[in-house]
Image (cartoon, rainbow, N blue to C red; front, side):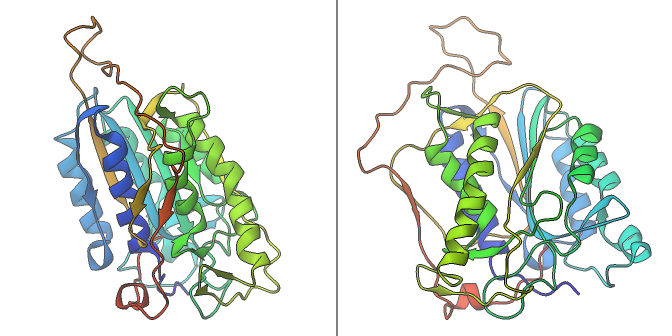
Length: 324
């Protein structure tokens, strides 16, 4: 029911690497906890959150990113762990998958950071067969389910697929959603203050995901030499991201408005707690606030370009059964 995904590990690694670069200078320290491949089990994730709970303070900023299979049944959202055994039946999902109640406990009850965001590049199986493109939603992640998640956790939630839509991978070696996320770190600073606010990140991703999907489809599911095979009929269910929030906006990271290179693949939850930087001696601000940073100089040739992993490469070809 939930086949291996080809880009989930590379997506997690690339996104966490870009977040480390974008957080430098804005935070005193950027710590990344990656749970990949065989480690992406319910028990390992629970252990990781238990450890993080003892390390994260209210002053920190916390990012939870997951590239995995996702499924919605009965209005409830489930993320599929590496060790999941079963199909899409609600009984199996309730007992063996990662439900909203568990995510709520992890994010709302254990993580004490006042600033946090949940990023879900989740997928379903069965929509596409063969090649390097997989659908990440067959029983799609509904807007209602995502809405309950951001209401329950009190954290903004940005997801790869809105109600009735699918999420895809295979765009230049990435999931479409994750590619848009990384691109937003470089090009999402619309107010030109040198920072990427949560609303800027969401706006860029919501705008770009349908565009990237359209490009993927228009090119016969081939982008930069990466060949994909589409199933699920003619592939007409265009992908669109969805953003839900009940809180205010905040600066997440610095804008990466200079040329950078990211790895071509990433995997399961990249849990990124960000420790806030100390205040500047020349500026009187409360310790919980971020120190002001100078905006880096812009370059005419700025822009993030991923390294494309060809289908035959060992890393991209390795089957990865990681939650998305």
